Length: 458
Ligand SMILES: [Zn+2]
Image 1: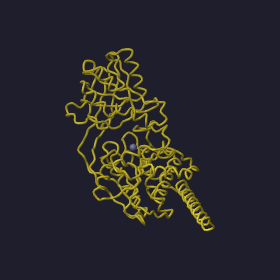
Image 2: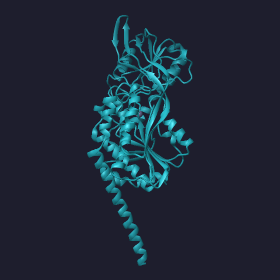
Image 3: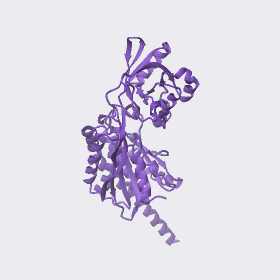
Image 4: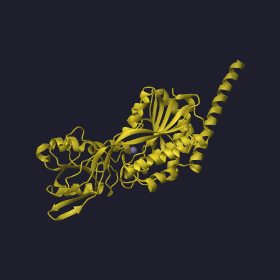
């Protein structure tokens, strides 16, 4: 009996010591990130010295060189570039649009071309507008009502959804597939309400597709600011014969060579088990991509830097991957997982930060029940940092191709209320990122990687 009590006490003491040690390590991680972190300086350089990083642009090329060099300074075991061919789309001169109520009487509106769109003819397009809110409404109108007109998709993001990414998902098909759907009925162009919850004057870009439509059937597609979407809608209610003029100057060029940037700390016990942290290095061109996804890039780099500076030797190999081309092709994410599969690399864990650099709230887990329960058992450790949201859910676009039945995919979940004010717009800039919020995110990611590495995947 005495022996049994002793064993129990030892087990309890052991567990107590483990928990205490974890508490201390996590405290040191947050402290290092908040008092001596590098993430904000890196973001400052990426945003203000390099700027926007659309795939195939000079900015993207410079970002590859810069982040490779910075990772090289961290004393990692390996740093390398993974070549990947990416699409190159250029916006050209700034777009122009107006509403014409009667010939000669016009109101200018703010638009921007959607990524991947063809341009309007050089003189622009002027046509009547038909407003719809979804594809069913478009289909009900049919060719008779749509042919020769500009289709205006005006379904707003749903304001009562607390998770703004859900509101985004509920709307984004208008932007992504609007042109394909509208061209079926003979539309000459597409204007989409910007994916933004607030009313302002900013057009928000983003990717769109033509699927396999032949070149001659492709119609130009642009986003309009939410304020101007409201104006256009109101004017259409007053007079459905008003016209919209718009001119865009964008162009799809040939694919070009680019890179994913990768750094690794090789594991001490299980070097062939990989744990990945990442964000995407490319961004849209209107702002400088500080939230989307400069924040995720520098937070992921900071995870490895914190492991090194705090002297935490991981059992498993920890990789930071800065993916290229998430925004308009996902080529980087796909390439990485294809090569991992070819090389037989086992990725037991992958954590993506691509939801903005705002105050972290927790994580989305895409994993087995056992691994989810394990993560839940660590919730107490995160409480002092106000990290409480541990839910099953979507991890991120770049890591998704790595999903296997056994591994753990995680998405960092920051507060999302302000994200879509900036997303893909000219206001996605460095000043919109708060230093402490960014650093808290990096520390939160590092702590989770530390725990999963220490206790393993179930
Ligand atoms: Zn992103």
